[in-house]
Image 1: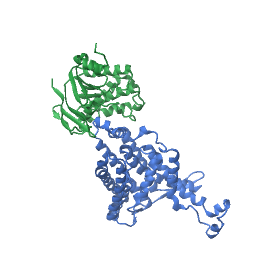
Image 2: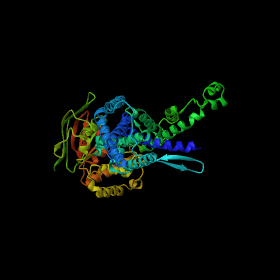
Image 3: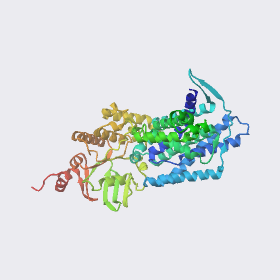
Image 4: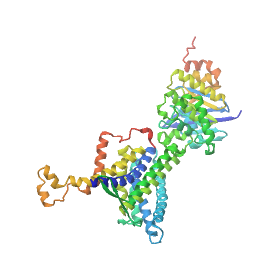
Length: 332
Length: 243
């Protein structure tokens, strides 16, 4: 049973990152009905900028936490600038174009951003400097025990704080109400004196700021960054947003956590479940494979990327609008 | 009296169709002016041009002494020219209170206290809205949404209120109520340009009127004289004047 609690901890950590990235997709979709495929690259740029700052300051004798904080303070405005610029020059001119045009443009922007990062940071995997020493704490319940690291705790706490902040922003502030008004009826929002273009820019900027923090979290968690890291991360976060019901903030959080947990459990259990010797007990034909290598599995942990998408397809088969997708009134 | 809105030689075309073909309309401070006409006469198109949603092909629209053609919608709105759109256009997912707050969006932040007072004032005018203050606007009936849409527009403390077909799709008793509200708003000094297909009610409530047909103004004058004009009675009031 130890696997269960451990994978739950790992899955929730990862799920928090997915949720924060998914919020960026869902906010932008809610307000301009655009799937911003470049959002994953914004996350990557956040990780890369943080990497550069941490590398530059690592030998300076500053306290490690201060360096991490500075890297966030550099990554957030850098990503906000990227998010704003992309909307301003690539998406805004296509605001009234057929929907396929901005979609293809988003894919183009994603490729451009990847290659800009390639030029700046190179094509290799970059080892993210682990300047904060990882410490593990043991969690025990009556039947389970698992460890949680200080980095995992930081990721979870930071994510929860950001989500709470975002909800407060969108539901309690004037600009937040204006964002929801714009998402519901942009023309009428303009008639109320709301500068719709500013509100849309603001939405991209907030989404990119969240993405920057997610990038730093992912880099610190895996200890690695590279110019294509935004692709799969973005795809999973986008799937999380769709799973929860795109356009719905609560849905993005729920979808992100689910994808993270499913992925962790898939990686933790599917290898054992599909072990060829285990299968041999129930099904004929695996004896030779079991004899050759008793540790072999049909679906080892290399398949962990697959489970989230399988669940996504199954859910959409029965609930095309996503888990919380019917609550259109919550769009933001 | 000073002229608040002055439209001169306005032409609007889109998609190859000339919807408005050179109209002149003016509204004086404090007046309640109506623009009537059949479906497709160009009334809503004219309103869209005034609020900056459509760009005219020719002509000028002067509001408060300056030409506002080419200005973005939100800037026009924040100068106190506020439209209650056709079909009401409430924000369905926002609560009643949030809808009213959005109406006051263009007012400066330091007016927060008086904005809150104005919301209470709207609630006293329409107790129904107060009862449902925390519910989303999408749950309101059509008539209640129209009350909300008008209240929301008034939250901006407009100098000129444009109303696009406020009676559309409402039960007759609701229509009476809406027109009472329009009359009351006008009495309190707000200048109003009212677009209506319900010509009789519109002419009864207004001081002056314009009749639009096929993109041009075919008749204009005192509402009282338009009400008895044989052409108006035949075409828009559905009365047989042949006898």
